[in-house]
Image (cartoon, rainbow, N blue to C red; front, side, top):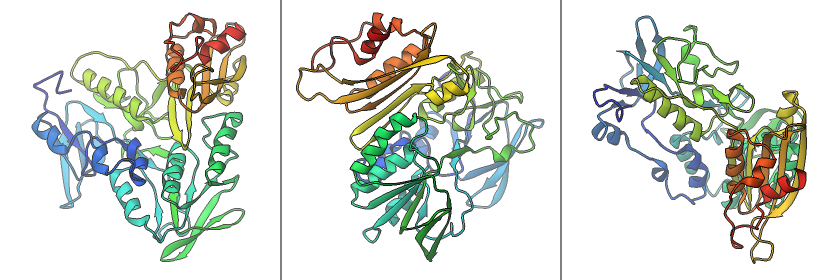
Length: 425
């Protein structure tokens, strides 16, 4: 915003005391791959104040907005004093909070969530040599990344999942590859059980589910996140059922002069052609930039997401983009699926690694709908190519015309995604 309008007076209100850091790097701080939480901080509060001239405030907990008076109100944490600030235009970028139901015994020591740098520091302080058995509730990306990090510290790790598979953004057949990798690395998997509470004397000792009890002296709840928008109750702002603020392509909300971006906002899905909720740092950065531009009069639109993500899990890379088979069925689309195994580089070159690919495309027009790729090296490269193809609404046959890089140490003469197109078109 200040880059586009040097005269703009910008005030930012942060509940905590740290600005601009990479939350996605926090699991790797836990096992020491990233030495310190300081390494994931992109810009300090002072940088925003001195370099950009922003009135960057910390410890300011916003509790309400008044869109008619155009004011923001809240409480200063250090003094417990109320504050009221007027605005011409307002951006809501409050992110999302970890979901943590009011389980019985949830106030016991040794139970954590991971979303912020203070969360990571609390985990590091608590995950000492006396901790032997760790239970992670939830098998999404954070759960998997933390399972790997904690296992690397020599702890026993168990994942309890409400459903019948890890990472529900993948289809069951592809998730089996993830299950195999988990077990190969000593991760205990418990499926189809619902956590009901915890037992212990001062510190957690047991996790209770609807089907049994499990010993644990450390628990991480990685159930998911919910948009942090409760403070907007009563404003009449239009929201999704999960509490995400509905925004248009300009990041405008249903209230005049109020914008929203990131994990607290909706994300238009180009394949589904409707608003969705896929909280990722990449999307948050794009939406925040676009909101800022529009707020100072530079018209820009958010073009939408295609549902791309990638994650590391021990020796596997888990990549997906577009629609899963489950999502395709839910939308009632007529589709076909093709799966194959391939190598990341030329088959005759030493050091090749296997990757497994699953493509989903329309039955008649062969328009691409989604891809899931799991394996060793080269997964991220193929997912990014496929994500680009989805953005441009390409067909299976169109993949054959892509001029992709080839050299035996990096690829085969036909890239794996083109091999599938060659066989099916």
